Image (cartoon, rainbow, N blue to C red; front, side):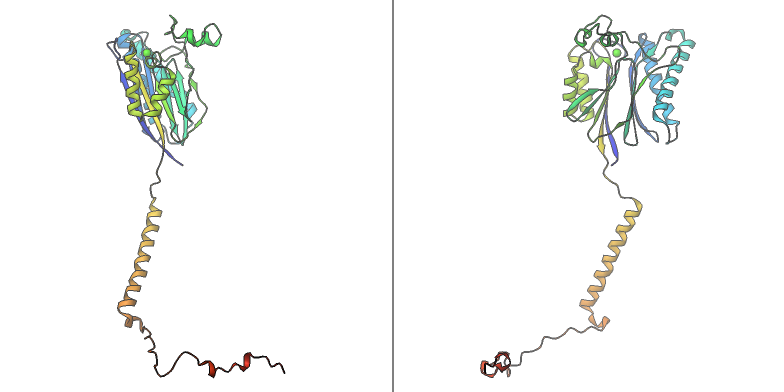
Length: 314
Ligand code: CA
């Protein structure tokens, strides 16, 4: 079984901010299918620049690869390259100092999905009537939840909620979370989003909207819902639905089909000639035998020599 992907996406500035510092992209090539969502940090110009640069560098990294590559290693390399680019660019332009970006990536290759994450953007998977968060936030509140200092409920309104512990644009090597291979199932929905969505829209609402709508409509409805509930941040959603490929005929199967129809044609042609021009084949239809009225087919019972069937009792 092979798969294709229906992709929907929407990014919105929200109701409060003036600039959309989120950025996303979906790309197709020899490398497979690549989806990226980034949430820029560092003030208007910095945030906007950082998320765009990150998506570009990640895309360019995969476009340069041959079809046969180690996905997990290249996800690490792509994020390292994006990190270096951000650090380098900020070094050259003082107005971009301090810029950074989150990054979430889903990469589909050979019927397998891989995810990578840095920061507090998220990836969810909707499968078998359930939603699962595939990524763990790199955030201060997540660390506090992990060490039992906070409950997930308390974390939702925590003042340090926006502090992230990992991102692109920092000196040193990046340490993204890269998933193990995830085998694709028909109708899987992978949802990538920024915190502008998840700060307002509950997981169960993401599940319901993603389950009941095609990807493009779902992305639009999710952004609308985040805006209805406040929209204080930029909101970006990207959804990929896994679809099963309908087999397209290969060249050899096309040739076989043509040969089959050709043979059928030949057989029908010969049959037609046989019917309308039997002489061609020196065929003569047998004439039905005229019944001879002078003879009867019925045997006169009196004339039957039944002696053969009679057992002589004497
Ligand atoms: Ca954000």
